[in-house]
Length: 326
Ligand SMILES: NC(=O)c1ccc[n+]([C@@H]2O[C@H](COP(=O)([O-])OP(=O)(O)OC[C@H]3O[C@@H](n4cnc5c(N)ncnc54)[C@H](OP(=O)(O)O)[C@@H]3O)[C@@H](O)[C@H]2O)c1
Picture 1 (cartoon, rainbow, N blue to C red):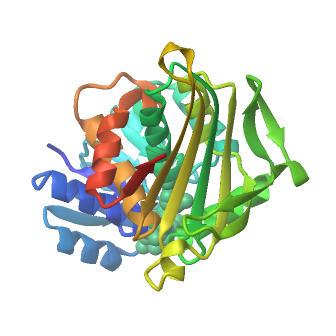
Picture 2 (picture 1 turned 180 degrees about the vertical axis):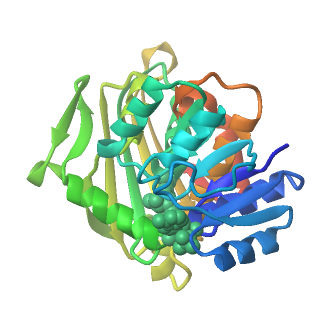
């Protein structure tokens, strides 16, 4: 097989995904790309069966040699000019991206609507789609779902590398409003209405806000839940408060009816003691593995349309995620 080209492969998300793919598929060749060749090479050398290249996101050939051959393109850095997507489309290669907020997904979607020459996995969800998949896995116990609330607590020391911090600034500047689904209608909430409180596992309450993130339409449309919101808080994590490293936490509350129409509520907590990095890496790796597996039709795909929620949860637990349902 030709190598998987990971743009941003020397960064936190890209290098993490490369390491997971290497564990699962020792023979899968990888090409890690960034601006700094030495940095990419160091990561590649540590992995084995991997090479390093420089890329220029401003060029439609990415500045790669003409004879370069790849099996897929992963954008583990914001594909600012959509040249990575264009490169993949021109060669009929599967493409996966993780860096668009809900408000700047449209150019990517239009690019694929105009030229559906390859499968494109939109994975700009939290942990590249894993929170959505965990919610859908819990949703299987319900006959009908009335409401889903996802709350993510990120440690302030675990916001990712410089590229992730720049993305967060870009997205926060684009809109402070959150997208919710309320009584079946997708609606924007802002100001006081978007301000929320999020409780950590050890009972500390953090101030947060309802945000616009692809998880909302994904979860709402996949479950049919008429009420969906995604709350986000950044602060000191329970892990760090307990003297350990920065941890990450997600709480997914589902309400509806179970078999026979009896009222049912499930609260699922996911926590990773090492923070968001292992989960982001896992989400990307699952997507890449899927895109390289059974053929995927050209066009736009969401993680929940391609990946089995039960498999995703199993891999999350294997990767050290603590999952509890109450
Ligand atoms: N959806 C999710 O769940 C999720 C989670 C975490 C992160 N993310 C996104 O993933 C991306 C990477 O985050 P991160 O924490 O891995 O950041 P990071 O550690 O700063 O890594 C960025 C990577 O991209 C490369 N890079 C940066 N600017 C570049 C440019 N102009 N041209 C070519 N390569 C460039 C860097 O290498 P050089 O510096 O050598 O160029 C590095 O390999 C961000 O866009 C972030 O928003 C998404």
